[in-house]
Image 1 (cartoon, rainbow, N blue to C red):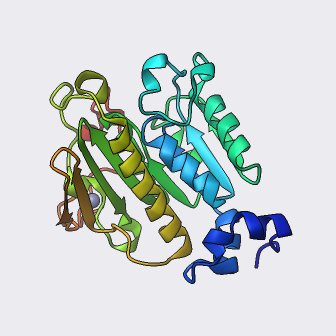
Image 2 (cartoon, rainbow, N blue to C red; image 1 turned 30 degrees about the horizontal axis):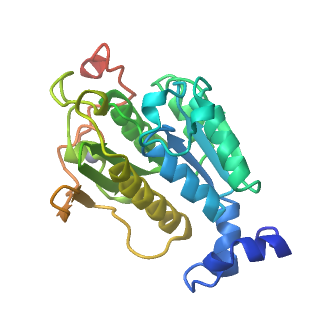
Length: 270
Ligand SMILES: [Zn+2]
């Protein structure tokens, strides 16, 4: 189906290929896959590093920020020498060093309702590693409209949450779990409340595993399940997420027919 693996590739990916669920065919599938990652920060770092290392052939990365010294405590894709560079170019350089097989597409801009649908059309799977609710809801809604599987993660202090949303394949969406965006200031951000880097490492690593499983259609992913990790007590819990008949996006009588501008609350006018 795809191009044959070179001798170098067979050796580079030998630890993948030897796994029965992956094999040579799975590796070729990964090399032909395209994933889009929102954010090149605490979650985006392990996500992009592990997906590039595994040989996912095309990785789009969106982030509008530049590397700051306060990022380096957790955003392990960037280095001290990268301070001041755009996060997307810093990430691309690191990923190209790690694995020159991988094409990196940079989107050094804010992901908004006006650009996201056009961007994600070109990808197989979308991974959310964003750090704010406005982006999280825009990404969820855009994935629903474009029928893309969404691998979602969030972290704060010692806690992490991760799930997979496939409402186009009868699963719940992020809004089935959290119907409306919380008012600004109600839930603290990592900037306000802090985050342990390794927690972002755990959640981002789980997001990369879920992405690889979705791309290869193997195992059971977190579709319909929310994994909640408390690293302070080191408890991992799981809650089932039900598809909400009343979900305003993916329910029986949806009222959201286009992407919302969360600065203007224009979802209400549909
Ligand atoms: Zn829903």
